Length: 179
Image: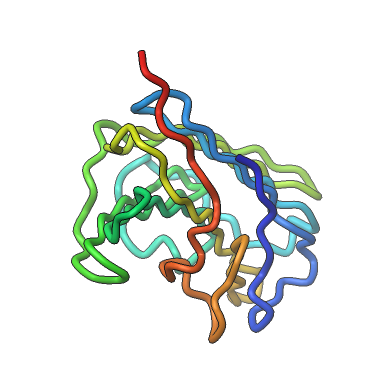
């Protein structure tokens, strides 16, 4: 699955043109995400490399996210990936309700490459998922050098950015192939 993310109009980030994102279900237990930020990368604050451990509040800085909801379900998983290598995983029972840490058998692998006009973040992660298809929202938060954040998604609900909103789950992640 491939999509282009756009900034919520109330939080623009002019030097950045777009974010191209892909999601791939490599196997029943392995997902791969790729985020390519295109534009003047020097305008962004990109977190420095850090030990790859689970941490909270990654959304307060440049961070890449994925939200997964099994078709026909209210429960969903939120995955956060920082270019620093830090990460978070949360499970929700309903829209913004029942939040708890989601188990991951291992820390996600987060690879980052950067040039003057491109930031490339590749993530391999093993969340606990059912074998069926999922609805997906891929999103990003970019912090500029002035400390302002912009919020990127394939679709934004009215009223401002809200990556958890059910209307944002617009992409399809296919069912796992049977072994």
